[in-house]
Length: 104
Image 1 (spheres, helix red, strand yellow):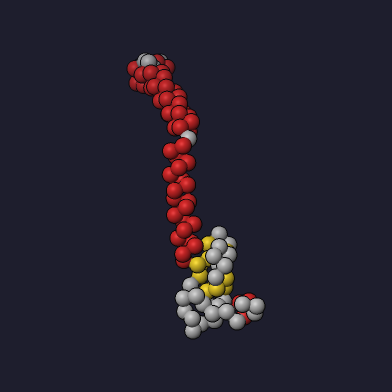
Image 2 (cartoon, one colour):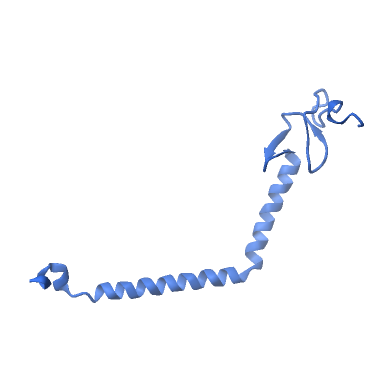
């Protein structure tokens, strides 16, 4: 295809002229067969592969980094301790303060 996109036909709709070339698989497609994703036009097959790759990548990221789970647990424990001591402080305030008789 020395003429490039000017003489190319869509891979799916062979009777239509190609309007875009997928940067991943390098095949030509018409305007209905491509979609914009992350600022580039890609075909449905490459978009599906990219999305599937991101899903497995996210799953691996959560499974392979136990340090993140330890940090999350530590932060949760710190917040719980802070709320516990704040509640104890509020519980130790005398009833006269709440009734307004402490100021008399």
